[in-house]
Image (cartoon, rainbow, N blue to C red; front, side, top):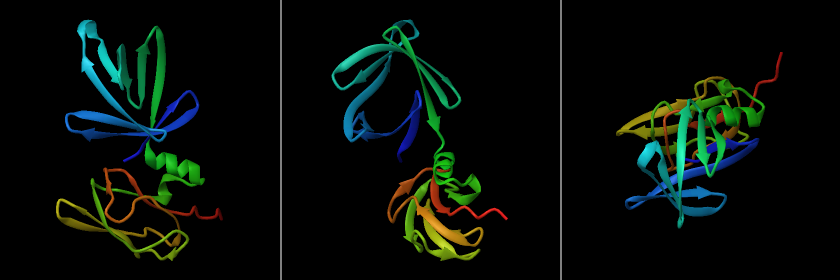
Length: 167
C-alpha cells in the first residue's frame, strides 16, 4: 500500500517492498535498496542504495524526527483516509475504510455511479471470511481506491462517496 509523508510542505508517496532479506523503497518512480541497522551510541546506520550514514531517529505519533549529517528533518505520516477526504473536499464520513487487512475479491461499482443505502459496493476477503462493504448512505461513488485482487491494510480507504451538498 502506498503511504503519504509530508516533508516541509510537500507530500511524497512512498512504500516499502521486501526483496529476499532486504527492502526496497519505492519513491518518485524509483526503486531504491534500503536498510536500517542498529549502530553504536544509540545511532542507527541508514543504507540507501550504496550510501551509508549514521542517523538518530525519534518517533512521536505521526511525526518522525531524523538527525542526519548535522541537520534535523521532520517527516509527518498522513493517514490515507484523512488525505483522500481532504483532497476530495469531503470528510472521513464519505469514505469506507477497511475493517481488517485483506484482498478485494469483487467490485460492484465504478466512479460516478449512483448508489442507494445498503447497496453492496465491494466484497473483501480476510482469513477466508468474505465481507460485503455496503453503501452507508445514498450518493454517487467518487472513487474506488482499491481494485480487484489488490491487497490492503486495516483502515485503508476502499471506496469514497461524493460529499453531500450542504442543506
